[in-house]
Image 1 (spheres, rainbow, N blue to C red):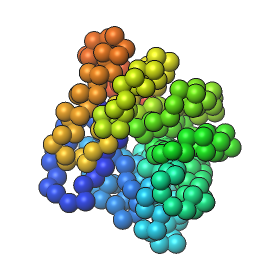
Image 2: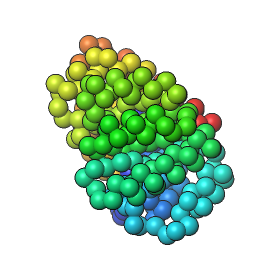
Image 3: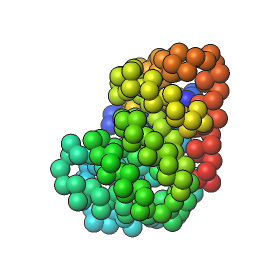
Image 4: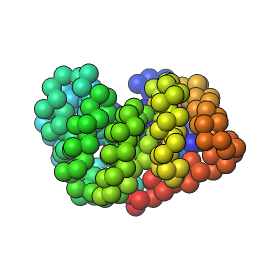
Length: 231
């Protein structure tokens, strides 16, 4: 189960045999993401690519969400390592409003902007659920997120982003198990994707002091719940 993967810009497709949530980064890959079979999909504009779209992007996104009721919104977000925070916030809010309008799951990218994100989420309308991709907020920020009862949150953790095991152990001590997800944040056809998921699952199972198989079952149920809330 991989709750966050991207489509390769090139390379040869392979058969996807596990449960995967594939998110886009911008309009240039929406159609390619939507063409991938046997995966769950989300489309949106990543804060890295705010200049990589036409002025019609909001209408294009709305039309696709109208036509495809199973598709989520993502990867969207706020990143203070990237320029033009005002534009980031404007694009983020517009996409979030569409997720609210069409009752869709949202996948959120947040880098060094956790307090800003929390304030935004306090003001934005409810959506079925929010997947916080490779969550890197601290304990206090995570507690604040959990207090926002108008949204249902899932916290995704990946091997190459969440390397600080002391911090991960602290977060897993109070994040509800039913809100936990594991992700690769790798390309869909990367040969290391499944091993990355397995290794992160083993790490989290050890921290939670449960069997790997038990955690895998829990993660799959969480993933299914995240997807089904959009439908």
